[in-house]
Amino acid sequence: MAAAKRIEIVRPDDWHLHLRDGAMLEAVLPYTAALYGRAIIMPNLAPPVRMTAEAEAYEGRIRAALPEDHPFRPLMTLYLTDTTDAADLRAGFESGAVTAVKLYPAGATTNSESGVTDTAKVASVLDAMAEIGMPLLVHGEVTDPDVDVFDREAVFIDTVLDPMRRRHPDLRVVLEHATTARAVDYVLAEKQGIAASITPHHLVINRNALFAGGLRPHMYCLPIAKREENRQALRRAATSGDGRFFLGTDSAPHPARLKETDCGCAGIFNAPNALEYTARVFEEEGALDRLEAFCSLNGPAFYRLLPNDDRIVLEKGETPESLPDSIAVPGGDSVRVFRADPVPLWRLSAGRRPVGRTA
Ligand code: NCD
Ligand code: ZN
Image 1 (tube, helix red, strand yellow):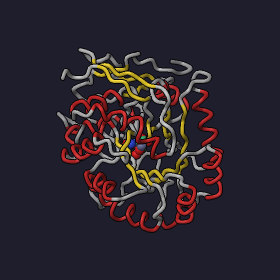
Image 2: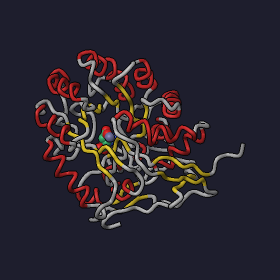
Image 3: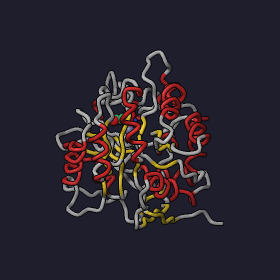
Image 4: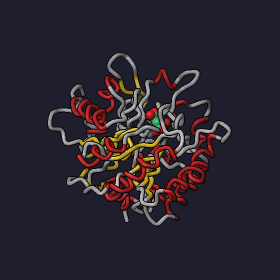
């Protein structure tokens, strides 16, 4: 059979996205809104989005950065803290203003200083979420500096995630940006109540990419890329069609100057080409027929939403689409776009047409 050159799938969603705010929001949103039907919007602004009213205001700023009546739908999240108000969260979920809650262990990653110090402190909030079926999205890394950075996800699963799920068996949890075989095995071993999002970059790079010929700040994100055997496990999970695994790009833009510095921050910006890299991976794995499940069907099923009602077409060209190496942010900054060779030959048949007020 000739290799596929064209594939049509239900419009995808992005189940883990950082859009930031202000000028950065304006610069990055057009890439996501051009393609995805919906995206789960991470609440780790500075200060974080903690209350329903703050999520509504943030949603308003996102919508204001889009052309009027644009169909892209931001799904808002709240940032869980030791003092989160269960009544506010419940009201936000029931009104539809808020879709999920994000748990950052305090200090685990960018803007996580006000995260949860001990999941026992949020027990009553987790009970309320279990009761109403509101998903808890977990940044799954321990923060103990004595734990090796490459082990922090596996240790989190054993010492925090699993005990928390035993205490709250009805809680619906997404282990965000899974990076290890341990995470895949954990999700597969459980009967219900847990899923995992997987990023394109963790399907494409292993930890060697961070040190290829020198130190590579644009390959640095959290959780950090792991050994090759982990990448292989993630590829098997993503391409399996199993409904517990879905696309969350974790596109996390930072100004290049804040990554190319003495203490560079974590985050890979892949919104302009995440789907294209994902298609490349599925093709390499002989699983293009399951791309739609991973990108467009499994996520809505977990979130108890309908899939998007229109479709997109990806085509494989002879040469890669020419994408900029970096994008400009109003005010003078630039953000590097994820790139790992080989650059995918897949592209949207309509071409990349970023949509925004300023695009
Ligand atoms: C994210 C960010 O920059 O906000 N960074 C990252 O490396 N993924 C935070 C996160 O999701 O951990
Ligand atoms: Zn993230």
